Length: 118
Image (cartoon, rainbow, N blue to C red):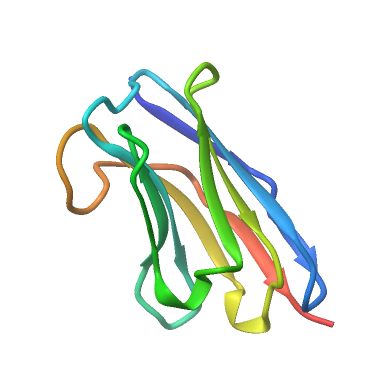
């Protein structure tokens, strides 16, 4: 059984930093990817960043230069370091993963709230 467990969300002031973690069990998603998605109220869920098993990364334009995705294969965990946070980054952040290929994740975590506000 595949499980993705997120942690690290919270309330932070504009310009601050947070690090999200997603610990996976049940699969190493070989040939696929693990990533972070977010959904703000009234908006569709969107890709934030993903990292493939070969190390390639994708970022949405609005977070390039501010967010960094990384993975620890020994721990089967993916991280999202978020710096220079803005109010528009406020959303529920979901860990998503897929074994093999591209496309939308096949597995999801429960989500963690990130709120950027003064």
